Length: 83
Picture (tube, rainbow, N blue to C red):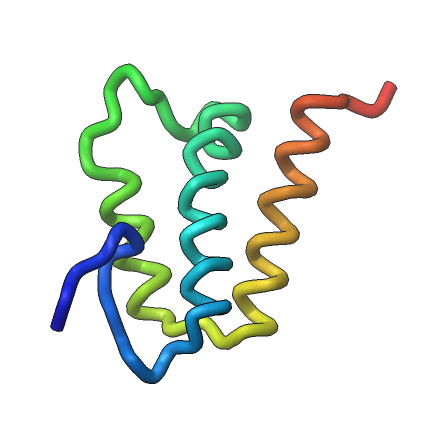
């Protein structure tokens, strides 16, 4: 098993899904920082553990899309609050 920047490599997982997962992991720290859950100054192992959690869940294409969209909406809400 070869490790990648998303935490694992599985040849059965389509590349498009791997790209979406990578995008999610790139957005997650910003989102979690905005909501006060993650402090990048003291990162510890939160992001590594989040990757492991998502990798164990083995989300399918639709689940990954929904999760990725959820993160995008949360980022938008925190960056552009509704008055």
